[in-house]
Image (cartoon, rainbow over all chains, first blue to last red):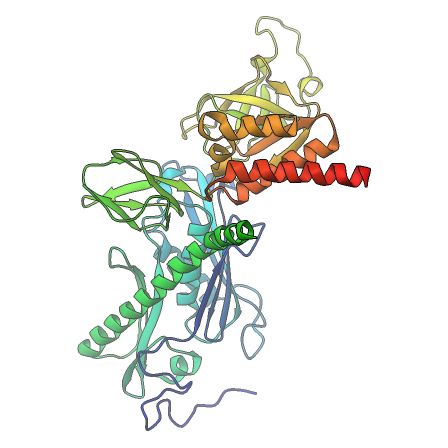
Amino acid sequence: MSITKPDRLIDENGLRIDGRKPSELRPLKLEVGILDKADGSAYVEQGKNKILVAVYGPREAHPRHIGLSDRATLRCRYHMAPFSTEERRSPAPSRRDIELSKVIREALEPAVISEMYPRTTIDVFIEVLQSDGGTRCAGITGASLALADAGIPMRDLVVACAAGKVDGKIVVDLCDLEDKYGEADLPIALMPVFNALTLIQMDGLLTLNEFYEALNMAKEACKIIYEKQKQALKNKYYQIKELIETEGEK
Amino acid sequence: MTLFIEKRSIVVPGEVLAEGKYLLGPNTYAKNGKIYASKLGLFDFTQDKIIVVPFKGAYIPNINDQVIGKIVEVGLFGWTVDIASPYEALLPASEVQDKRSKIKVDLTKILDLGDLILAKVVAFDRTRDPLLTIREEGLGRITSGRIVEIPPTKIPRLIGKKGSMINMLKKETECEIYVGQNGVVLISGKNVFNENLAVEAINKIAMEAHTQGLTDRIKEMIKKRREQYVDNKTG
């Protein structure tokens, strides 16, 4: 079954195709430390998106020549599983996968303090298990969690979220249908503490005013996600603490 | 000079810790007069120093660190040693043989592939791989015992203030415990029960390193296990 274009993406009440308000995010679930073998890991569920991120490193650079003498090399692999979309995808990295790997790496690089570990590599693996639009953003959000979980020194976490234009309205956190049949899509990545953008892409058309409106909406969304990110990182250790306290009461 | 958060609270990278003329401790950095955390960990401070005690992280060698490593390569002039770090360590052959003697010794006869060694770091500066020595009392090939691996960031907790934790462990479990700063711990005890006890205790310490009153809890756990053991034997 192939997806057909819906008649309209926003109904008479101003609600979107999945029942959200224009500035409403999809339900978000963030977890860290779920892979034992990886140095750091994270799992992201954003709406129907399901993404697994693993981080290895800093580890010895292999092959030797990719090591840099003044900092660690950050390597990034974004990949969509063959079963992640409606129609089977070839498991080989596509043009799109390679491009996204690059932009995600560049979105993470300003946050990682790579000068601490010269001649080593830090590997980030982003595996999309199920996709529903905005996977690059969810991937970045997850990757920065996994990096922090691995104990890699960072200046700040990185949060990403998209905004766009659908049926003439500016909306935030686009799902697959809105992304495909909407007028514009504007994914951004943000280092929230410094209010610094590390990724900004756009396809479609926006007027200058619409652009600023979308940008501000995406930034606001990033700040909401950032709070959840902090909670996810701390939760893992609070849980152990709580467990001990309840045991003590017994 | 102001602090923004409470002592011993969990911080994430990028969290603002303090403002003013504090000294920068490990895992912190300063920007525009403010001090930020650079790793996930516990916030701590002394009079004038801001510290983040990390939960996880790679082992970065320091000179005079005692480490436990595994021989992964035997070359003509020495051994390559895996010390659970991003940097592979080198143990030169001159460590074990007289430089002037012309007789070439087969290095595999001294230390072979897969052998574990207790060694000390003599040189390291991140631009070159760390250099090890085994020419000191107590260092060299490990012939018996059990190995436990924990994250290297938990080693300070395993040792405790002035060795309070590790001394308690040695006394209570009646085991010899050698702690490698790289997160590898060697245990050798009189019997399997004692060794198991030490392994369990060390894993518990690594798990709960960020909680308070840990030394007492570990002590209690060992006591309980001993009672259970006696009960099982008599009952």
